[in-house]
Image 1 (cartoon, rainbow, N blue to C red):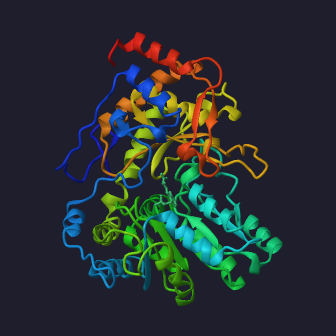
Image 2 (cartoon, rainbow, N blue to C red):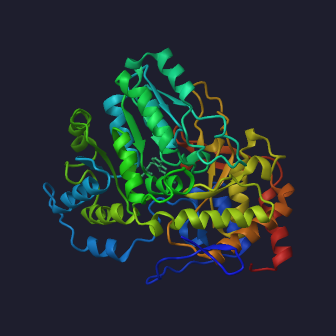
Image 3 (cartoon, rainbow, N blue to C red):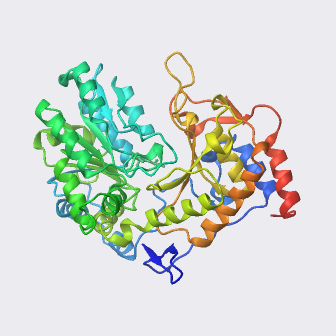
Amino acid sequence: MSIRLSNGSEIPIEMHKVRIVQKVRLAPVRDRLRAMEDAGYNTFLLRSRDIFLDMLTDSGTNAMSDNQLAAMMQSDDAYAGSESFYKLEESVREIFGYQYVLPCHQGRAAEHLLAKTFVKPGHIVPMNYHFTTTKAHFDLAGGKVLELYGPEALVTESSFPFKGNMDLGRLKDAIDEAGPANVSFVRMEATTNLIGGQPFSLENLRQVKALVEPLGIFLVVDGSLISENAYFIRQREPGYENTSIRDIIREIMSVADLCYLSGRKSCSVRGGMIATNRKDLHEAIRPWLPVYEGFYTYGGMSSKEIEAMAVGIREMTELEVAGASADAIKYFVGLLQTKGIPVVTPPGGLACHVDAMRFIDHVPQSEYPAGALAAAVYITSGIRGMERGSVSMDRDKDGNDVPSDMELLRLAVPRRVYTMSHFQYAADRLRWLYDHRKMIGGLEFYEEPPVLRFFGGKMKPTKSDWGLALAQAFEDHFGPGC
Ligand code: F0G
């Protein structure tokens, strides 16, 4: 939630109080440089003990509520028929309006099950934008991911409210060309992660449904950030100003045929699920659940997390919870804008995204500017962000690099974890880095996994040791030990 101060400015305000804390350490810059080198300039390979603010992701890193923690104490570990599952089912029925629920260990497990069941060689899978794990699973099943976003989607600095909308003309053309029988389904990601957490509108979702339904194609929503997408609909879509988050989520689900999600985001747990009212879809997926995940009533999740998810699904429909991260991101983005840092606008869900192509426009895309910026930010601040650019794209089948549409440094804002002073610190260090941006150079791989290389790949500076020079300049400015 945001609150207006008497001078007219707005700040994010915490609608909760802190009852448990976790200590963090701000290691000196020399230690940070060493940690970055050991991690192969890949922020995924850093250790927690070396990180001050962990803005890698909002996945599984949110502060849980007292009610979620309390629910975990009452879980039922029965292998089959666990009461915890029935509480989750009840919660999904109440909030999503879906009868059938399949739990799974996280979002990509749901994607695996969908790929296994519906994506066949030669199929296309149209979507508003891909997510890394989504594309990996659909590609592995022999499908072709088509990203059919509108012209506004890739404009980083914009005021367009729904950059996650599907382009209906492109969707129609793609289906005409492939033939409806060769379309696995259409997927709409609630706040498109890789292009800045940008939402779709309900109007667009309805139009997509109207187009595909008569063709016998079903509509899937990736609801990992469903409460944030609903929050943006309430703020930005005419006619929804006074609609509750609960009603907006219910309306989204009534348009979609099936929803899968990573429970690690909006729901603030560690798990995932697939839910639908379509018996045919449910029955097609269900047999595979015990093969890949676990029995129908736990699907690879711990019963404690299932309990917490049942609570989290209800809590994410509260306005203050749905907006907790979105309003903090808006504040963070605003701070960076006033300091002249190029960021993705309008502010989206999950993170503040810095435009690396503009921040370090002297680093060619072939040398991974977003990866280099993520490393430079860590060295100068102890803040761990995530590369969301060409490092996050795997090579094509001929071994060529695939340049990403955008080169973004993602500074994720886990829900209810960080406060205004953290964002002010981050903005200050980013400004210092912006003043020294010419010192940042490119990166090249020296170890590269064949799939999802961004997780485990290792890189080094292409030319001079710019990491060392940057650490030296930082120490010269702030003094040793900073
Ligand atoms: N869909 C979306 C939109 C996601 O953001 C993610 C994960 C997944 C699916 C996969 O879910 O991680 O539970 O298996 N996003 C995380 C992130 C990893 O950091 O953005 P998962």
